[in-house]
Picture 1 (spheres, rainbow, N blue to C red):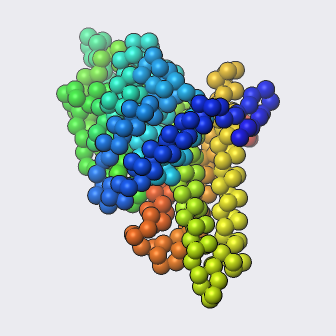
Picture 2 (picture 1 turned 90 degrees about the vertical axis):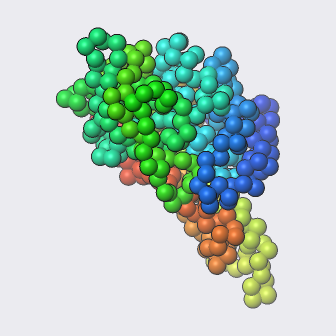
Picture 3 (picture 1 turned 60 degrees about the vertical axis):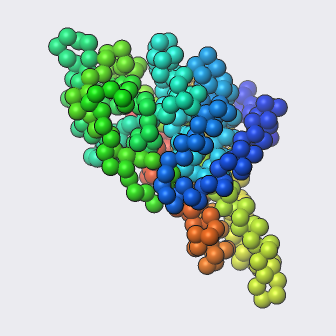
Length: 394
């Protein structure tokens, strides 16, 4: 595989090939056999998450000096696809650690913050989380009710409020939190904080009973006079919205890869079934209606992969020359999430009644794919972002 855009190119190195083989073998050996059980119980898969950490997968793009694997975005995408093919819940946990937690601190943190807050999470010893959403602020991130007020001594921010839909929150040791420090300033009044979940004033609310990615625990978190030292402000006061949006650019590439992995797993199952299942004296794959589904599924997967590679190249360009890669990341996330919905639906249809049964993983792929059109920016928000960027609107 080799993709080029201008002076930049994307090619699989020997290191990428070795990673791909290692992750694929791990996912099939360690995750596939337990995925259905974790989905049924909703239990957080801590054992396999720790094993992913031991392999360096919880901090793939994080430099080795901060406890990570020191690889690139292509390595991260390849890993996300293979883990998602085995189980989307595991890939969700992986995505939050890599894209939303580690990435933000790497880009905006001080040297001390990087060493103290990234190493235990990138190594997999601890779990990281990212908390932006509130009950009344989902897509409209500036509509926050939580408040962080500097105390009279100027040493701590006292944080009060409730956050919801926080992925990995029930098990998170460290959290990147976004809260209002100047409500009158709108989105310019949002500040990012590094939160130790073991400190007083922090508690966890109800765990969400979700349709899909059920083993990826999601819950509310509650702050009641939580005292956060000023040294744990990330990137400067009032810089939270900028940090959140920048981190989501990287996160959307990860979700695109997750969606593609789910789609690939569903497609592989459908292809095998179309060859093996006989009806009216012939394999069902010999009938034109099934062939049309296979062709459409294959084409959307290939197009999604191309958009992900384009987004990786745009990210490389932004990292070398400055700027953003928002449009490319949003295009990849939008297309791949909707491709996953299409492919999982068609794959289930090809399987007929067996696809609807929990005896096969098709219905899990179908349920898991649904969230990719919602989190880290809904499909509606992605379309708005792409169009506004194209029209030059801010």
